[in-house]
Image (cartoon, rainbow, N blue to C red):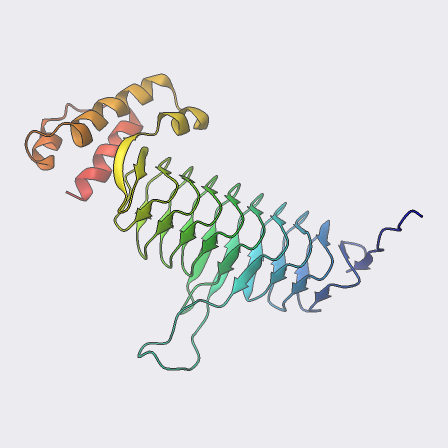
Length: 269
C-alpha cells in the first residue's frame, strides 16, 4: 500500500509551510517560501529568509537571522548559546549576541553554530558550505564561499576570509585569521595566522605551497597566479636572509593579489 506524504500546514497566510510535528514560536518571522520540516524547533527571535529549508530535526534558536535560500539539514543546532563561562569561571548569566547566516549557505548534518558573546555577532558569509559535524564558535566571522569540511572546528573569534577551503578534521584556534583563498589541509591545526593564497598542513600547521588549484577554481588568471608564485618563492621558499630583508628586496608588483600577499606578510613581520 502506498504511504501518504505527511501534510504540511500553512503559516502566515500561506507564506511558509510548516510540518505538523514542528514547533515554531509564533513570534518567529518566516518569509515567503520557507519550509520547516518534521520535528524542527524554531525560537521566538529567529528570522528565516525567503526560500530557506529546514529539512527535519533542526533547532534554530537565539537571536538568529538566516538568509534567503539557506538549507539546514537534520540535527543541526543553529544559534545556540556560546560554549564559554563568565569571567572568573563561575556560573551565571552571559550576555548573548547574534548569529547571521548569509544567502545560499548549506548547513549539513550535526553542525553547530553559536551566537556571539557580549552582544557580539557570529557571521557565516553567503554561499558557504558547512559539512557534517563542523563547528563555528561564538563571534567567528566566516567569509563568502568558504568550504568547511566534515569535523572542522572553528574556535571563537576566528576570522575566515573569502574562498577558504578546509580539509576534514582541521582546527583553528581562537582569534586566528585565515587569509583569502587559503587551503587548510585535512587534520591541520592552526595556532597562528594563515597567509592568503597558500596551502598549510600539519600539526602545527605550516605553509607548504601556493594554492594554485583553489585559485584556478576561483577563476584567478594565470598572470595573477604567476605573480603570486614569484612573491611566494621569495617569502616562503628562499632561506637566505631574514624575511624582512626579503620583503625589502622584492620588486614592486603590479598584480593586486600579489600586492595583497606582500602587504599581509609585511604587516606580520
